[in-house]
View 1 (tube, rainbow, N blue to C red):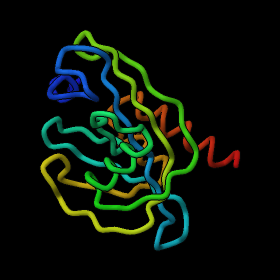
View 2 (view 1 turned 180 degrees about the horizontal axis):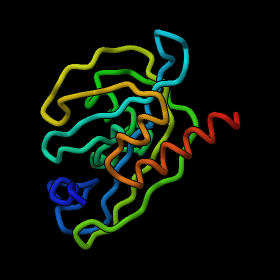
View 3 (view 1 turned 90 degrees about the horizontal axis):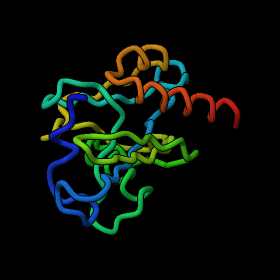
View 4 (view 1 turned 120 degrees about the vertical axis):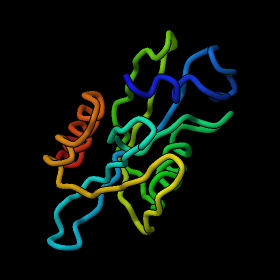
Length: 153
């Protein structure tokens, strides 16, 4: 995994680096296409790792996962969002530490992307194209869960 250093660095939800589990949260951010009303998925590019993923990040000390997911969307994309269906969490090991990422589907409600320190590009893609563009298999799994949940609703 290319984001090992990112996942280990810093104070993580009240734990110093190298201690305890890593807690993170994010969203599968979507909108209705301005062209034809179909669903488009937002993907962010992190130049530090040259990868495409869903907006997500580590929780701050004492922060609840949903609040952290909404904050990360705003910080990384510039968009406000309306979270909806809770998606399956991802659990995996990074640098010898357990990491749990909590996800929600969320509709973009307003905003404009501005490149920042973490994210240099945001693209809106139809789900099949987004699935192909995602850099990690676990991100494709979360996208699939979001699409299943939305179609079931």
